[in-house]
Length: 147
Image 1 (spheres, rainbow, N blue to C red):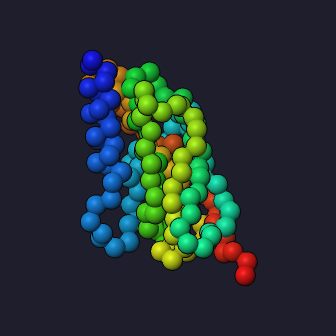
Image 2 (cartoon, rainbow, N blue to C red):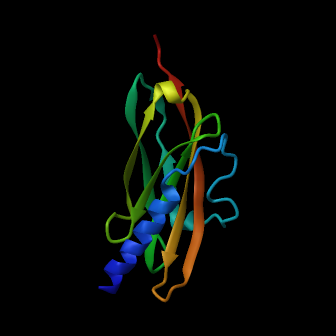
């Protein structure tokens, strides 16, 4: 019972952090700024390719080895103009520690170029102590399609 209540609490917290707020122009700071990078906790990797016409689904992969406890992984993707373009979340008890995430981009609202993906891992040890850290960022390109 306690675990399900806690997972629901973590899910609500993650949703509050991942859902976009009011538009404030160009976003220059990352949600992981100030966090220690922990490469030993895992990685998140963007998949390059072509920015297709219309709205399409794109993928990224993640693989984590979190410290003991209940974990939540938040993923953030920033486009070439430093705008946040997508995000995702994975939660202990609901999602595996490795897999593929998907996000949707529309070519008319973003442009081709270099994208950056990073993630924040939060772990609750069960006694209310939460440890947070960042996974190493990855960069990938979505290229212009040939005409």
